[in-house]
Amino acid sequence: MNRFTRFSALALPLLATTAGLAQATDPVPPAVAADLAVSAYVTHIADTTLSPEQVSGLKSIAHQKATAFSCEAFDIDDAKYQEAFAAVYPPAAEFDVKPEADQLKLHSIVMVTLGSYMGSQLTLASMDTAAFCANAEEERADPAAPGLIWAAKP
Image (cartoon, rainbow, N blue to C red; front, top):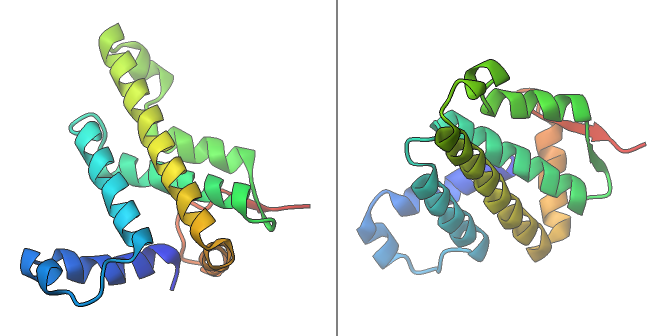
């Protein structure tokens, strides 16, 4: 079970109803609360500019970049990173025909989304680096994990 699966297992039952949150005997773990807050903010700013798939892709990139920064055994494969980023950003031919204001809006929202998730992931990593890195090792070992951009450090 990777970090995102654990997050879903913890967060979804709590989000199912407002009563579930009000009646919970245990407080929401800080890592879950932080992730929910950043995700709510990103959803708000992304609005109709980014699709849920683009937001998810940016969150994945940020998570993996934070892992590479925080965990000794991880590094980013530049080619895989460029491929993952290309999947969330329109090709030049599509981007260039947009009005300048739309280009600026899209670029700004992509960068703020990536930066917000990057900051969040670095914060989560700092809360318990060993656990964060161990979860990333599980994620990397999962053959079904989509969009991994990690390369083993030499």
